[in-house]
Length: 307
Image (cartoon, rainbow, N blue to C red; front, side, top):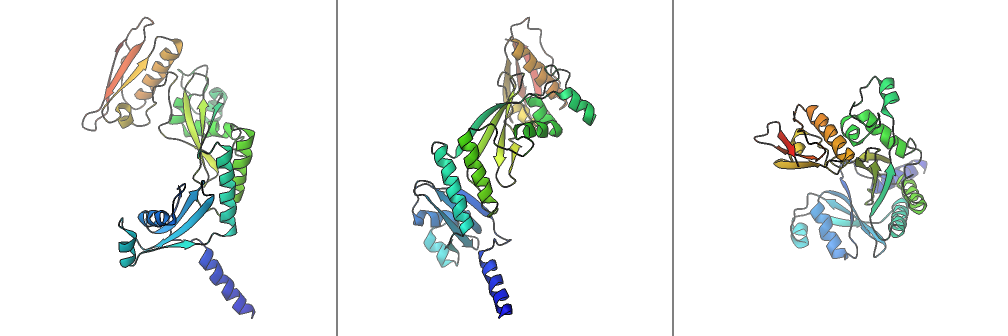
């Protein structure tokens, strides 16, 4: 009897466990019919697909066997492909309830945003890690260029905002913080389910530059969002030579203000570290413009002139 119990338990565990071959997706499909969800699952192809319907207050789990082509449900079935509804386990139901609560608290939106100040002195940190910090930085303070260029500083900024990973949602309101914490707790029981909530925190540095970090529910930590960094006057901070020109031509505008002048110096130094040289014009406080273009995948060429 004991052996039969063990075998039966193994079969049950195998049925409800997440297959190693499966790819997981989670999507929001508010008010969708079962027919639409069925086709959406087929379109997504092989794997397990969770659909969150916040309007209808339900989550539906489809498992697709085989590689379903983007054709009608009838043809998919005829070719031997199938999308079956899988009953939710307790952990999945609890995760949906927690996610639904966060959705309502956030004014019926899957996009949760916050703003926070990031004031980090690089001088002591640079000495400790034997790193160089930018001489053009504001009194040794970290800014968005450091987020782009130096992984150690990037981690520091994220850790400061998350109380070194102990309280990851410090920048958000109390209600959001509590609801998000409940989602994370529920997710621990069903870690294979992706949460379709986007939580972003825009960091503001002392010089006026900014960047965005986003919460990754799977790893339960904030991560830097590539391409989100902006200098103190709103110009994008490129992360690769191709981004300097945007694949074509891109203009950077630096007004004749202290913030504009500092942003210009930071951008030029940043480009120089990519081996892109720029001669800064004499502006006499009027500001300047820099235009960068890219031809034949070579390093971008940048020219600057007074405004």
